[in-house]
Length: 415
Image (tube, rainbow, N blue to C red; front, side, top):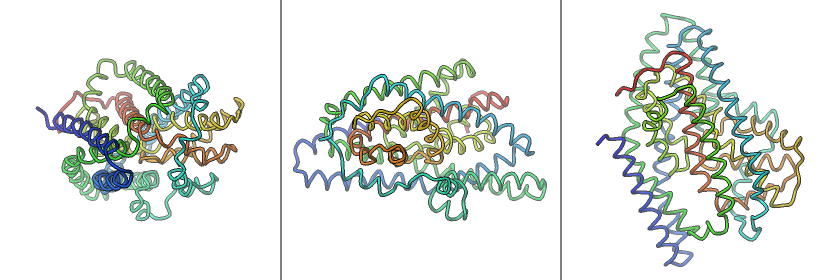
């Protein structure tokens, strides 16, 4: 059995074991014991996510700079980047529109009970929220210090610096070859580290599932069953659209792609972080046949501009909160909200609950009570599982499609 298949099996076992233990703790222990258990077992997830975050910044920088340098001249970089942005913008608009259409059809907010609000979690999120302004947006996109961006894992800022650095390196030709070769060695070393870090994935998954089931219990699905069900309709519709376009462009290669990204999908689903699988996804897409120079250029961009699952959820959640408070927004206002979310969502990097911070800020802009985020917090962890996995699928398709458009998609191979 392949090592990646073994890892997937271990993760699934960890999910089941975590759910069983969490349910046992929730049903048989007092609240103080439950809180203590959840806090302690979640440390396993924290350890795993911090190990992944440790290698994200150097991996993005090294692979993106090497990818741009290998692409060669600025014209090629612009052509490949243009094709990627065309996919990103189209996929983002489709994702936002699916969320907007379905939330208007199903009206999930009308069934949310105010008594189930998670006010303590809402206060924590609101503390992280800034009112959207052009100044805040520019500060979030453009780094004032590469070292500060790397220290804070600001992927979008790292991407901006890396693009400038890579283009400059490509433009000076032979002078940069030695440095690019060394940086390529660094990227291979970090990818080797990925294998070591992924060994901790089952523990991280176990901790995440056990903590949330112990705290919320299975009864949470009774109160929020319709909300989750309607959201899953949206996720299913988005998967159908993405895979449909994938079949049109990649044809018979799509089942093979899904097989290659099974482990990243399961890890993203169970840890609620698409960022957690960035290194592993890089490795699997190269195994699938995408050339390293395309993967290292497109995938980091995708993590800033192409989080399809999160985008769909933002319109869905924002409108659901408005419905819960009985606030009617006309079509023009809803479309304005959609365009605002296109901007404010960029660079959220797929970390857990980052999309809720954007939703909170958006609600405040459109006179929807931002504390309404408390209404959807109890079920959000389970929604986050599905949107994180969808982010991984979207970025995998974006990278392979651009590879196909560039004639850089080979047969699957081992690396």
